[in-house]
Length: 361
Ligand SMILES: NC(=O)c1ccc[n+]([C@@H]2O[C@H](COP(=O)([O-])OP(=O)(O)OC[C@H]3O[C@@H](n4cnc5c(N)ncnc54)[C@H](O)[C@@H]3O)[C@@H](O)[C@H]2O)c1
Image 1 (tube, helix red, strand yellow):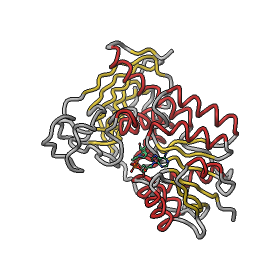
Image 2 (image 1 turned 180 degrees about the vertical axis):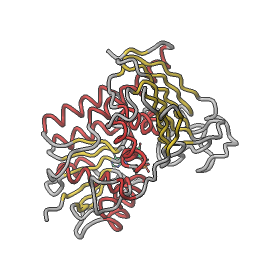
Image 3 (image 1 turned 120 degrees about the vertical axis):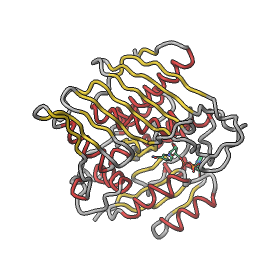
Image 4 (image 1 turned 180 degrees about the horizontal axis):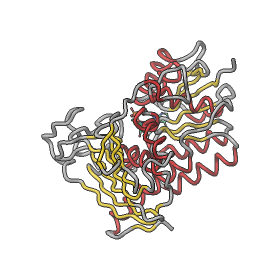
C-alpha cells in the first residue's frame, strides 16, 4: 500500500500530543521529516514518531522543498501559518495547517489562492468536529431535526487556564488571545452545525482585565504579566446574512464557574441542542404537546466514515486528511470554512478597535 509521506513543521505541544501520535497510528501514513527551530525538539519528535531514516531540519523551507515529502503539517504559532502554508503548497505539497488558519482574512485568501494554483489539498485542524457529540449533532442538523437554526451560542470559557508555554499570550505572534485560540474552535463547530458561512456584521469587545494580575490561580502556573499582551476574554455577537445570530464567548481567565470549552448551543424552529460540556449532548423539543430533552448515548457506533479504526478525534482528523490525499474520501474541514471563521474573529477584533459594528463587505 502506498503510504503518504508526512513532514512536520513545528515539533511543540500540539505536534507531540495530537498530530504525531495520530499519524504514527495511521497505516496509510509515515512521518519522514521533522522541523523545528529547536534541533533538540525536532530530534526528540523524530526519535519517538519518525520512520526509519526520517530527516530532521531546522529550516522549514528545506523541509517543504523536499521531494521526499507528500504532505506538510504546519504546527507553528499563528503568525507564520500563512507564509509556511503558501510556500508548501507552491512546492506541490498537501497541507494541514493548525487552527486558526491565519491571523487575518487576507492571509486566508492567499492560502486559498495557493491551493488553487497548486491543485493540492488544504485543510485546517479543527479536531472538535470529529468528537462523537459533534458528529451526532451535525447529522441531526442535516436531517432537519432542528428546522431553521436562528440562534446559537459558541462557547469556550476557562476560569483560569491561560496557556503559559510557547507564545500563546503574545499578541504579536499569535494575532490575539482566547478568541483566536479557543473561541475559534467553538465558532468553527457552530458554523459547521448551522451550515451557515455568510456573516453580515458583528459587534465585539475584548478585555485585558486579569492579565496584569499576579496572584493567578492558573492551571499552568502564574503567567508572565509582561509577556501577556493578548486579551484575556472576548465576546462577540454575529449576525448572519439570513438573520441568524451567534453569541460567541471566549476566555482563558474569567470569574465564571461553569467552564466549558469548544461547545455549541443551537436553537431552531423545530428543536434545539446544547453541549453541557465537551462530549455531552442534549436535544430538546416538543412532542405531542409535551416538552422533551433527550440525551443520546454517544458510543462507538456513531462513527461511520472511518470504520474499523480508532474513534479518537485526532485519529479521525488524520485519517480524513490521508484518505482525501489518497482519493479515498473528502476533506471534512474546507479552507473556505476555516477562512470564514478567521474572517469573523477578525471582525470582532476590528469592532473592538473601532468601537463600531464591523460589516463584512
Ligand atoms: N487544535 C488544537 O486544539 C490546538 C491546541 C494547541 C495548539 N494549537 C495550535 O498549534 C499551533 C502550535 O501550538 P503549540 O501548542 O504546539 O505551540 P508550541 O509553542 O508548543 O510549539 C510550536 C513549535 O513551533 C516551533 N517553531 C516556531 N517557529 C518555527 C519556525 N520558524 N520553524 C520551525 N519551527 C518553529 C517552536 O520552536 C515550537 O517547538 C498554534 O497555531 C496553535 O494555535 C492547536
